[in-house]
Length: 163
Image (cartoon, rainbow, N blue to C red; front, top):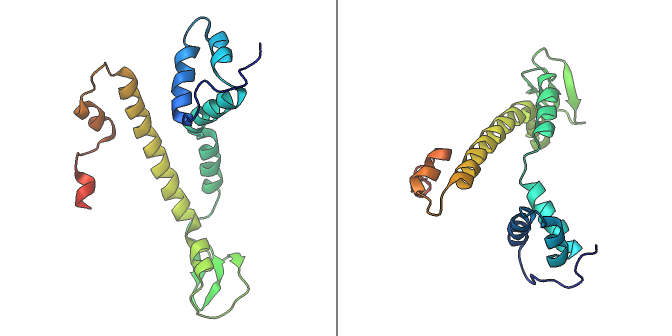
């Protein structure tokens, strides 16, 4: 079977296409329905949208594994902002400068391990909360109680307005 040549859903967003694709995929003749309704480009867009919503946990685990192998305590050497060293004073990176000037790249490199650890923790936490939220949405009936969804991610209504 070949896909449609012209769109049944002109102007639809990737989100709308993904919803419609999943709806039709749930039927026993889902593959045939999709072939009859969607162009190949629309199927590709919908599948790419759905794939983008899945966390790349293997990649994050690989990043965390590499991070664990990095020695703690990176810093810029006192008196030479261009030399990044570990807690033992061993050079990690030399940026080709000498002296006690502010060096943004050096500051960035010196904070990479700690910043990466923080980012990975925040991302894992966000993914876990997003999974809870998605579960609540998937399990919701025709009418969703707002507090049911709010409690899934620990959100306090109106709290963003106080920042």
